[in-house]
Length: 179
Image 1 (cartoon, one colour):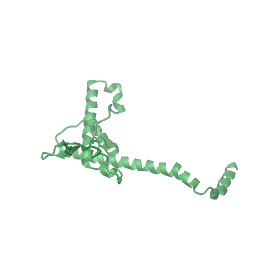
Image 2 (cartoon, one colour):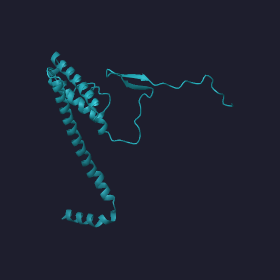
Image 3 (cartoon, one colour):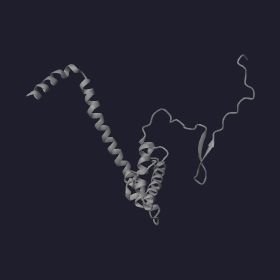
Image 4 (cartoon, one colour):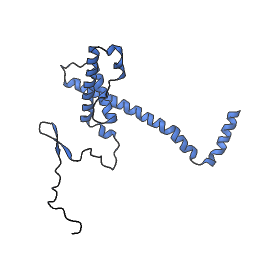
């Protein structure tokens, strides 16, 4: 019976509250659910892109043998780059699964090195794919250049080299303030 009284009281007070209750419900219920759903959809899409990219690597290298750890690192590096961008460098430590006694052997360390190498390869492949520029929301503000005096230029053989930007030549004489 108390629940019925509470419901009737809330129903009676609802018109007096204006939009406050609706805004609170949106902030507490709708937005978190929408954000969680979007995160799940993006994670699923990014994982599917990583799997497709890995299949492409296997097709392009038919005789190459990759370890399971390399393949896992590749997929995680690809997804990480799409999610976070950055340099594509792997994290400072391997995933938690490699922290156990089982990997405290020369073979375990080789597996971790394979994972790191795969991560770098996956992140590099994701960077070259161009998918990230469609994931990041565009803004009218141009991205900041971390080093405005360095510009990258691609050479004929496909390598990237950074050349300093030409700066204006300073005047030979600095005019005095009272001139």
